[in-house]
Image (cartoon, rainbow, N blue to C red; front, top):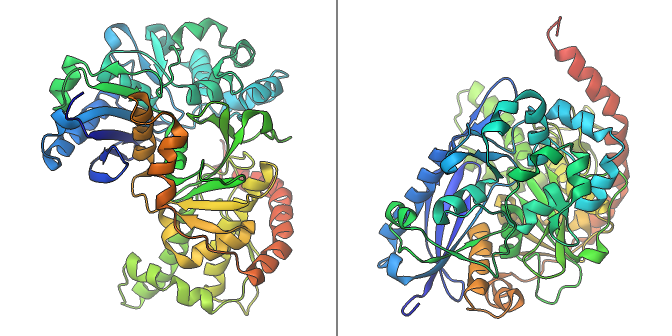
Length: 522
């Protein structure tokens, strides 16, 4: 379209929906964000109203229009990504069937336990490359089939978050190769797989699965109704992005730049650890854990392991210090506590105490799955103080990262970092030494929205290939490599076997603690 010089990336996360404007060369122009609310309950549910999510997305786009002059006329295309997993059911007239079950929803746990012990589960894992857990649409629909069949009876299509938004933007029911293949398909051909669907016991629900489209090749026009809701121009091409994990990694540098053995970790509240490989080079571990998620690059996938909690552990440790100071009448902000991290670390010795960062109430899912796993320290003595505790917690994040990459086959040759922890020089040193690789940090602010917008850029022909787009949008924003500290590498190499051994032998302890904490009679 003549005069169009902007691409919009929509990133619908669990708690925030962002609409971000980029120019065609990948420079970020403006960003608008709207809180994305969800509800949790004691039964393990985590739900979000579908209608509310679309309204919030439309609002974010309208607010972006207030920030960018002439946005509607200047937009060449938009693309949408969003939180992964979960189940977003739509019925007649594309109306919602109840609230969405989010990736945080734990109600399918007993169904996952049953399916995991079926003989067909290994075949399902070898097709998808993805371990079974309560987050996934396949597990959730299998659970609904047994316990909430009325939801499936009222549904005509089962979508993910970004698919639901794409439906509202274009009127088209579809999903993308990334979520389709790790949930119901095969990462080798990026199509649905009969073996997987049968292993989940969902042959009778196959009609709910939407067509799979490739967003770097296919777009659909923005509908008149969506144009009225968003303030954009009807007919604007819309690209369906891949799941947010790989869009963020794509925008942050998981692929490209000549690196033969590059990995990308997003270390925020949770931890996501990924490496891009040819599908023929995927390493499927014996434990049957992790994800294999396609990239919007022919023949290339990401191997993924995820930690339920990353910097949440650091926030907890700093909270202890804040509470102690508050008890003596000293109010200290979280920002002030964060500024003290480097000093505390300098007062402690590396590689002395093992900490397992399983602080989430949902346990852990990478590189092993255990809902009962809990955080803990091993190796404290009377001579250790708060600086040692904080160092152990931060090193625990590095050990968890190494644990995840080890489960993918080998440690990376270069680690590219994004997320809140990437801003800390002290944490970067710990992560670099933990995997014994140089670290590079992307200067990209909104990597997820950028990854989606890159797909739109390729789809409309602004770039011939994703490689060309990566070379202009991603590689120039990577900082210089920061080499690992040899002393730290040695210290962490010595203590890491203790980290792994302890988490393996603690499994029955976690189970016993879980039983002991239940009220009598449960």
